[in-house]
Length: 118
Image 1 (tube, one colour):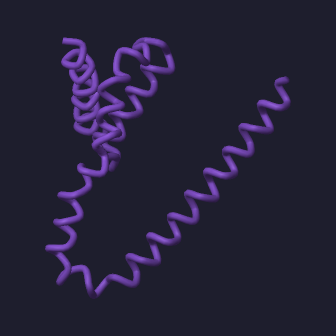
Image 2: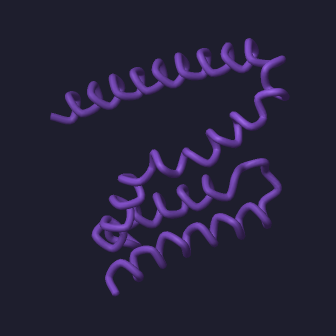
Image 3: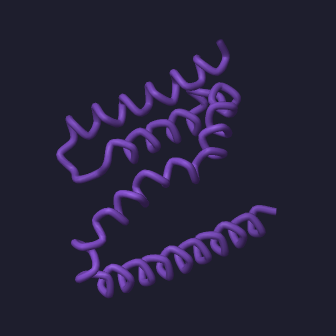
C-alpha cells in the first residue's frame, strides 16, 4: 500500500504538470512543470521526502531502461537524421560544455556562500 501511495503522489504531480502545460501558454514540457511543482512541495514541506523516496529511488534505478525506447526510435529514424548529424553533434557538445560550466560555477558559488555563513 505504501508504494501505491508514493506512486500515486508522483502521478498526481505528473497530472498537475499536464494541467499546467494545458493552462500556461509557454513551450515547457509537462514533465518539467510536474518536477517544479513536486520540488516546490518538497521545499515548502507540503510533502515530506519519505512520502515519495521509495518510489523515486525505484524510478532512478530503472532510469536506463526508460531510455531504450527513445534510443531505438532514433535508430529507426536514422535516414532523416544522417543529413543533420554534424549540427546535432555540435549542439550536443556545446550544451554539454555549458551545463558542465554552469554546474561548476553554481557549485563554487554555493560552497563560497556556505563558507561565509560559518
